Image 1 (cartoon, rainbow, N blue to C red):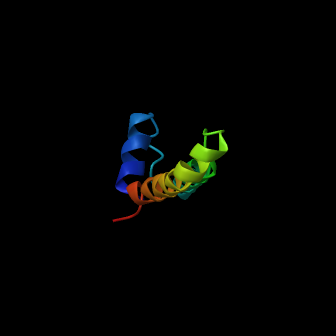
Image 2 (cartoon, rainbow, N blue to C red):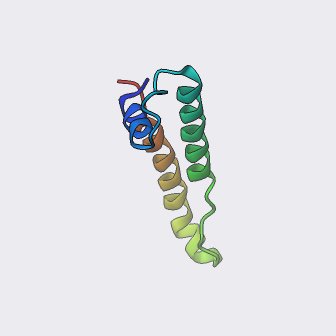
Image 3 (spheres, rainbow, N blue to C red):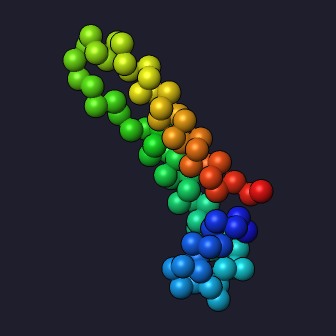
Length: 76
């Protein structure tokens, strides 16, 4: 199990259950869902001129956030 997931399981009081594959899988699904939410977050810019100049930056930021979430919990 990823060390960070193990640390969070202990913090949550699941220390006796951290070796169970179900809890590891549950944590992986939460991580994947958070990454999906990050990448799907719509740009808050509404006017067309600003969107054209800054929308790409927003898109890249959401992609980077999604990748960072996955990398943070990646097995070492």
